[in-house]
Image (tube, rainbow, N blue to C red; front, side, top):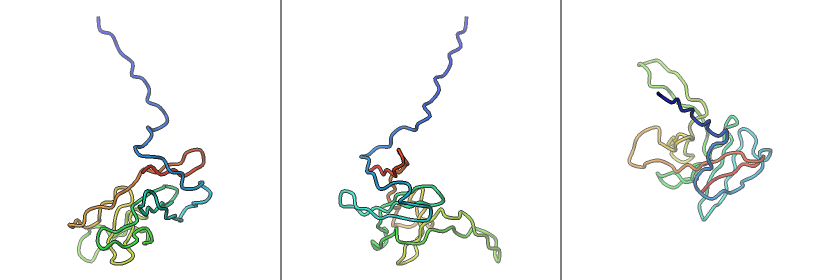
Length: 135
């Protein structure tokens, strides 16, 4: 006789991210399109609200140490045929204000692979009406 096992439903709440929680501000204090630069354990970290999604990155470009989180959030051009131009990935990239290096907000990876590497990203989420960063 074969017994059918039922899987236990996963919790509705995602697991708590690793790191210590730091309340950055209330949701109302960081509206869409705004950012806040904070210092945690001697590190400058930018917290951005992009289209209602929160991102947190180390505020230091790996190229020459520019304040990365002061850069423009934008999309990028797609890899297309000659004389064909297509803008995509709107609001998924941040551009270094000094030299224009582009890094993906979700992962910190550069648009163009280079020896500089990626930018550190931190988990951030909304808890009880607060924007909480885990570092």
